[in-house]
Length: 151
Image 1 (cartoon, helix red, strand yellow):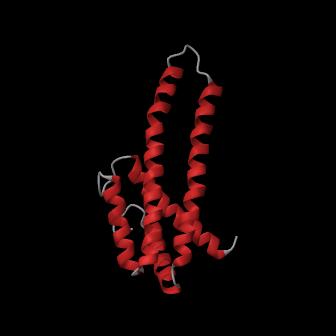
Image 2 (cartoon, one colour):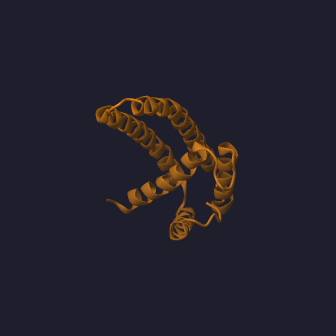
């Protein structure tokens, strides 16, 4: 796989993880997913000194990921009810449970594919210095995953 694609995928995984975690409920830094995403977006913009065009692309990523996280979370209630009904049966319907898992996995995969397109558009808009700074921050974040010091 090309180096650029690896970096895009890594960055996409980071942004998706942060945004989806925010969309699923409470996060250590902020109980409101939109406020949390806005704070992360603001910090990224400041650290990378984004242009207006780059900021527009980053906002598109943020908005898309928040919407996807909220939709995924909303589907959680229906899934929970289906699982509770299946658990009430005298015998566990393994096929039905597997179907639920596959359905949720497919929904997540579809969302991820669409998100990567927007993330790639943002990444491609960065200049070399910004990409370098992003790689450094990403490497630091991956080296210390449980420290909540910035994005």
